[in-house]
Length: 93
Image (cartoon, rainbow, N blue to C red):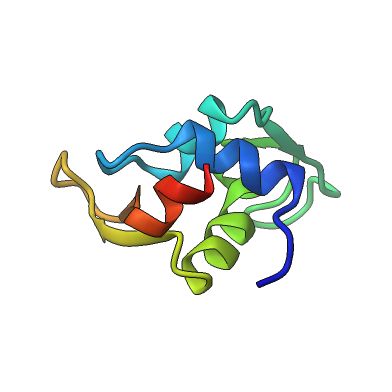
């Protein structure tokens, strides 16, 4: 297995065995809110804010493929997914 990046390590340290949403993980790992800009013409364009999940989801995908984290349903019953550490993920922290 290749070495983990700094962001991957921060994400693992921010996680627990308790399921967390990507935004919760992102903010715990120190990701900042992302702002998008657009031309302002047309539907869905213009200045808008995105949560920390925008930066964290690719990292979560790579950690999941390595078997360090797993997906589950959100504990609050809302739509979307949550992530938690596997035993391998706890050892890699």
